[in-house]
Figure 1 (cartoon, rainbow, N blue to C red):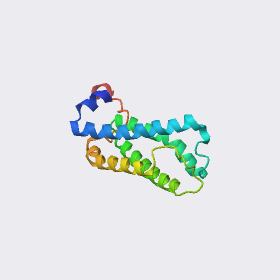
Figure 2 (figure 1 turned 90 degrees about the vertical axis):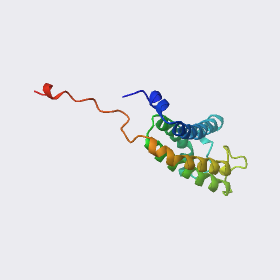
Figure 3 (figure 1 turned 135 degrees about the vertical axis):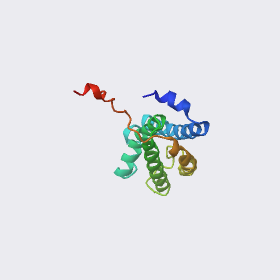
Figure 4 (figure 1 turned 45 degrees about the horizontal axis):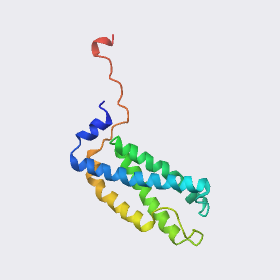
Length: 149
């Protein structure tokens, strides 16, 4: 199995660019959410209902996972990323209309997040065809037939 970075470098330029777009968008998301956690602690989203609060806490890890999976050239990263960003867009628009939300909500805001989601989805179809559905670890090669006794 070749090193993921070597495989990444072998991708056509357009595919590498699309993968970098996804990596940047979800990397910025991870940094933003981790920054919120550092600034406000685990209760940074305490104004939200428990399910929304848990989602907003977990999405930082999900964003990191998407970056790693795209970096490993795995299609599952696209699926996870699509679900995460659609859910996050919905939650952010909900928060904008929620009276319980603080006036100075952390993060980039629903409109900016929606635009980033559009960029991600525009890049997705071309990226899908270049990513692998292979397992993260390839199975060990079986013994040659003459060694099987």
